[in-house]
Length: 266
Length: 148
Image (cartoon, rainbow over all chains, first blue to last red; front, side, top):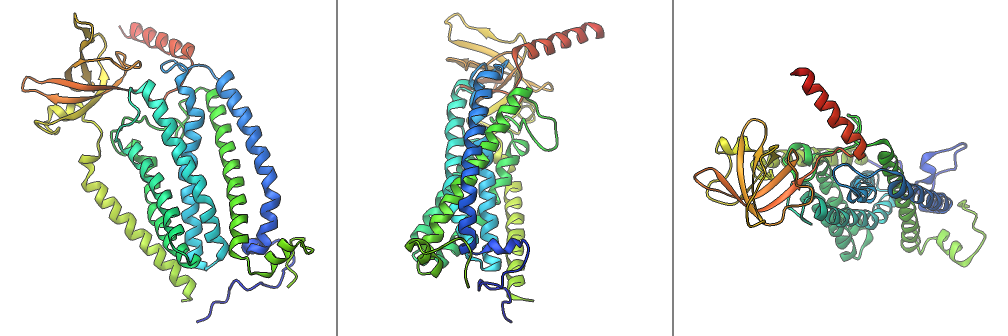
């Protein structure tokens, strides 16, 4: 019983191979190249989205202008769930294939996901006071999102508490994968139970229940959140790669400034 | 089976078991997961007796009465099947309106009056400009006159 696919560098194959980028020394320069497009897309989409959200989109018939926090609240809440699923996915890939990079990706995603969960909770509270009349209630949607935030914190805390990165990765992966069960609960909570939180305005199965300009602004902000998240995760994963592989040849070459053009000269 | 496939199967089985367990737990605690009870559930005595709970529904059109002291109000909560009268003393949220959603926390007395200590407005997931809302209202009115 031997692992045929190990992390030992494979012979470079002609043409594009997805697995070519599955090792840190090949992914590092690729991640670097992807950074600027992510930042630019995030900045432009945020500017356009906020402009549409605050100046073009009409006021809401029931809520007046206070609904405008939706342009930050909903993208943040979506990303908090998507990032958790991505984190759980990379953890599962890491456990199955024993790839180093997968766990690094999961570790890199966690802080950004936690920030999104926090932003969703915070903007939700600020939105709740003028509309519902309260900052916080313990309904299923709000409570499960708070649990998501705690899961992110738990993942990061557990990883930080274990010195051996391999053991830290495995322990963290357990939280990430088990906690992923919470994500569909958050999403469907407003359908399954009576909640103070309203149902989904945008879903895959039904027409959106929002005016078109409002929806456009919100989707632009959602795309901006995606671009920012990818950029932030790439910056972090590059730092983690260098830290964890500090004794590897490619990092030494990179740090000492020896000719490093992204190709491993194995 | 390669070790890699074994791990994949183990993780898959683990997730399946976990999802099953969580589904069972949520199903069992379904009654405790609701944030509020509807007037129909209250009428069917499904709501907790003798302690604080929340009710939710629509504020019935034309049912809001304001007391002489200016802070106490009375209104009827309906889910179109059953109704419940709610008494409350305090400031109502801005979005509180007849015909709109409401969630109230309080106690039910023997006479069937629900005395609330907190009233929250529940808005729906529809966002539209005031003109569109106005047009919708006009269309509704036109339709109801046609039916009559």
